[in-house]
Length: 375
Image (cartoon, rainbow, N blue to C red; front, side, top):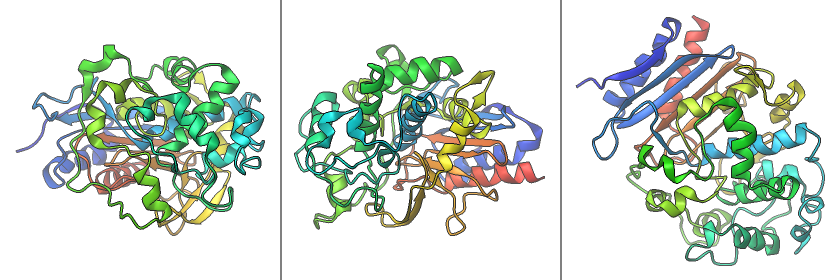
């Protein structure tokens, strides 16, 4: 049975709508949204399917997008750098003096953006509600010794990156990153995306449907296993109010494809979107400053990181353009920024697959968007 699809689609981008529809019939999507801007304008804004309750996925449905949130945290820090309030090449301890403990005096702010600070997990056990306790988490990160020489290699900071970035934002602005992001980015752009979701939005939040298999974390003492073991970010927790209202800037942003694209479109269009200038053209280009290249110590696959985003490479191409920045969230959500094509694409869903960096559903939509541009 065909799933009704709602929203807008420019005729030039009908291939995206067709791919979105087939995600439901061929790839078992349950509820989802997809959005595309081209040359700064929405050409696709579609949603369809239903929630785990059976209620329809609506225009204003939002959901936890896991690590697609990282692009929002990164953008918050890049905005401060563009304003001259943060030097990305300065030691993090310039803004956060306590961070210099335990061999971290030389760790630079940019290492947070490129997952190369050596702090993807913690040795101190994160128990009870400690994950939601900002002071405890940032204190533990300040005390933590790096697991490898900072700046030499990436190792995906799955949960901790948000606290590292967020503490720099807090020290510089006096605001939590959730408040700073809301006031300086989400509200000016009219984007329904939240880091620390207000209780008033609770009726609109869809539940994630866990993947068939959780992330495998063998207890072998490797950096990867230690990263995912402590702190843990279990899917079951995403249904709780404690998770939803906390500020976990690496993993608990709530939004949909439209709100992600509404924000990230600026990075595909010289720093401006929808009549608002978020950062300068140089600030927007900064995401492509290559920081690390090689096999990631946590993910075990080759990745090139720029400032806060993964970068497309000939060995791992996201599309035909030379400059493409991207990231994705556990379960399948994705965001792609292409300033060469002036294209921005996002996919958000409730039925999770087991991957950490998106899956074929989002990639099919991205391919359809590029095919539409080329047609």
